[in-house]
Every structure is written in C-alpha cells, then in structure tokens.
Image 1 (tube, rainbow, N blue to C red):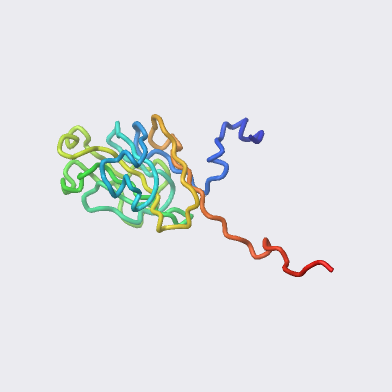
Image 2 (cartoon, rainbow, N blue to C red):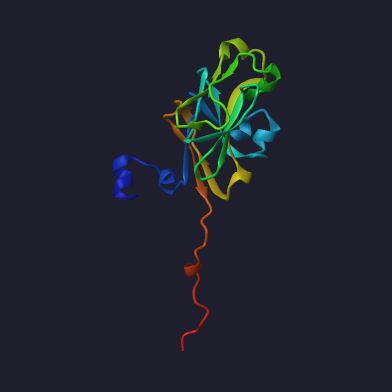
Length: 184
C-alpha cells in the first residue's frame, strides 16, 4: 500500500479504476446474481451491483450525459467520459406500471453530475404492485473494453458510497514491443 493510500484510506480498487460508480440509491447492496430477473442475474447486458432501496430518490452514480430514459420513468442510462454506458433500473416489473408513482427529473441529453437527482419513486405507493423494488446498476459490456468490474457489499448511502470500480483494458503501446532484431 502506498503512503498516499494509507493516508487517504483509498482501496486498491480505487487506485486502479478507470471509473468509480457511487450508489444511486441508499440501501443494502446485493450482487446482481441475486436479482430475481434472469437477464440481470446472468449479466446478459453487463456487470454491476443492485440495491434494496430505502429512499425514494435515485441519483446519478457518476458524471456524464443522460443517454437513455424510459418513458415509464423507472430506468435511465448515463454515458461517461470514458464512453461507457451505466444503466440504472428501478424495480422488477416496474415497467408494467407505465410510470405510476415514478417521475423523471431529467431528459435525454442532459449533463449530470454524481449525486444529481434523476428519478423520484413513490416507494410506499408502488412497492406492493411490483415483484421487487430492487434497483440495478449495470455497466453495459458492449459500451467499452472492460477488463474487470469490482463491487462492494454492505450498506450504501446514495451518491456517497463508492460501490463499483471499473477497470478498462489497456491498449498496448507500439513502443512496448521488444525489437525483433537480435543483438550481434
């Protein structure tokens, strides 16, 4: 551990990460493999983390541009400066409510900063009408050359808890290959 890591208590993931995502909602973090939706749990779209939300507000997990926003106001995506797409989706079967109890606070093309409010969900109003309130945050694997995704566990506070570290594949530089001319 470097002296800076020791002094500032940064984890090894933070030092190597190309992108750090923060909790989009307050609550308990759970692995995607435990989400009761096969597309999410089998990581068909990408890898990340899920949350059992304890608050009505879903915030931006990172800086970027809103690249997708469902008309039902239960999911959105942010395009980061690394050109990765981070998809956040509230609830299992929440789309069936057609926006009831859910409000979008942004529109496609809006620039957002980590912690900016994106969706407002009336948890008490809709939690009994859907299969689950689990909120998933997924780094879309087709959006970049991802080497590794590391996730946290435990309890998270929206926009304050770092919880997903994304490391991108490094491009080999042309001068990093050894010369093929033998020494004479």
